[in-house]
Length: 279
Image (cartoon, rainbow, N blue to C red; front, side, top):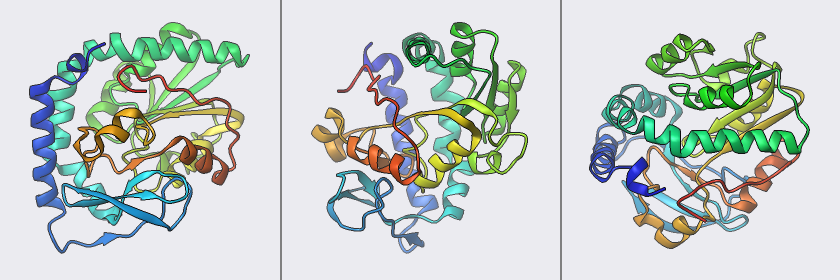
């Protein structure tokens, strides 16, 4: 797999340009921001790393996680994701242009990897909840390799939620926090998945707890995200296109993931690095 196949240069450059412009529109100088502890281990000791798109990034002194602080307030963050041109561009232009390639290069191999993992762990599925399901591509591919399972979607974007419904997936239109308080969704899934969402959220600990709440007792939570101890982030730092605030705010390291799971009371079953373009 080549990077240009899933992130064409012209579309990526326009997306990053719009993202930078959105910072000026939604998070201008003087706008309220909140200081954060390490989103992985909760530590408060950190060292400056760099500033990008006006967002200061730091390295946690305890687990080395790279994260932005101070970060937007939850109210402004929600407004950004609801109304920003860069979000509309990604949903309506960028993603449709790469959907077929991403299905073939990312989602199909990932679904097969998950099938292999479940067989190794001798886990049978009854209900799967995919949080941040987007247009349901991952659910499509999971259904292909694991038929006969009740696949469901949690998706806050109205257009994507409708696509999931049209594909026949029971869909909760909202965020994980909302679904976790709904008795029809809490403690129901034998497998809860979330792909490339954790780097976007303001409070990863709360987010992982919400994923765990959606899982039934003894269930599995599987989430992926951009890794702060990945070779690409370590080598490129602020020059990495993946470091694109306000979209990406958290880059948990290997030690950070371990610490986060411990804080959430979860047992680590397996740590995988499925990316094809990093190490």
